Length: 602
Image (tube, rainbow, N blue to C red; front, side, top):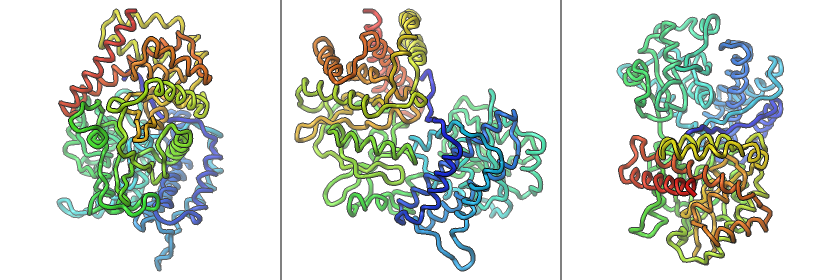
């Protein structure tokens, strides 16, 4: 992709603090079990957002990391809630009790005091929150870091008995470092934000001394983040800083989100250290799936589905095609590494789909949109949300459009009504709007130059003079952004419903919330609406209040084609993609490229 996306929003500091405080205080009113545990997880992640934002603001103001009263209080506060979450996980969401030595409610009481004490350290009135990708749509479960940290003191060559000190990389690392500290009983916990190219940790003087003072030779240093990405730069920058301050390489242990190696872009120093270092990871499957599961996923949803018959079936990574599509039929391309977790379970003879939607506010907003779409007859029914997963009945004997019989005129009316419904009901605040027309065009030019050559890229440049008008006309809504034919199902009673409809403009996808014309253009491309069908479709949308001018539709169609071309071609080149899937992706990307070439040549 030629541009990056993230989930971000501006929040008022004390409104967020009060929301966390109220939520933690009200845990006693939440049903014990997965629902209570999920609420505690949501507030832990909100607290991580708060810590991240406030310390990033302090870094921007000071120009370097400093250990301040704010740093101290935020670290203690986040670790306290992480301890409460750890207890909740160990006791399967049971309320805290007295264990004969110390009340298990103590971490929550400490956290509530910490929230109150934040008023004494001079925090900004508002800030911008950035939601880490793993929590937004990557299916990163905080419990996996608790389990990994619990294995820290297990024998490797010899049992480790020294002090633990934890450094997290701000972002997801704000929460993950607190979890490692809670489960590993750390003596010191801090977070940093590496910056620059290559990134370095701007942490010197008194703060560095505060973190390293008194650390004996037996101390172990944990570096925690949600990566690594291809470069492993965030882990590398923190480890470089520790080594530069005299910490032995043998004293480092890494807590990543996955067990993979660093990519070819990593520095040689980082790759060599990573290969030799102790790394502790625990997978989602290990904790929640199979006969040895610590807290089986099936148990999370039985209050919605009824008693589950047998283990969950993993249909993520494109495996849903084997269940949904007729045997022997052509498979649409998927990018397995970027698909959300999906599972099928059976209960009472029926099947249910569990799909990861995200934690906290993101998950709740997707639940609300799913309910609204179902009530309007535009999407499948949804039963609820359980710790990040939307739960909905599987549509038995439904088939995607390419494998079903249907009335084309009915489809056109349905899709036009769908786009109009989203335009009316799912309006996005300008602050959370996705890529601007200028950014869409910049991406399209880069993708066209790479795949089609300089001449095609230059033809896209003709839109630059129209960007001010396109910017003025844009009315962002939470668009679907996935209008592909296989995303539309024809049910056994002949209804047409849209699936996978709540994720792609609210996650870390860079396109994000767009003007409804983006979905109109996507439908024209993906459903093959041309000539009279195109006129019928745009006229039907206009009668429902969605009236883009022709130049808008043409612009979004061109930038959509370039975006899809770039996505599929990039996915086809990624290491680790199955050769057969890579070929599907390549063919799809080239198909979009040929359609873009034709559109630019007209």
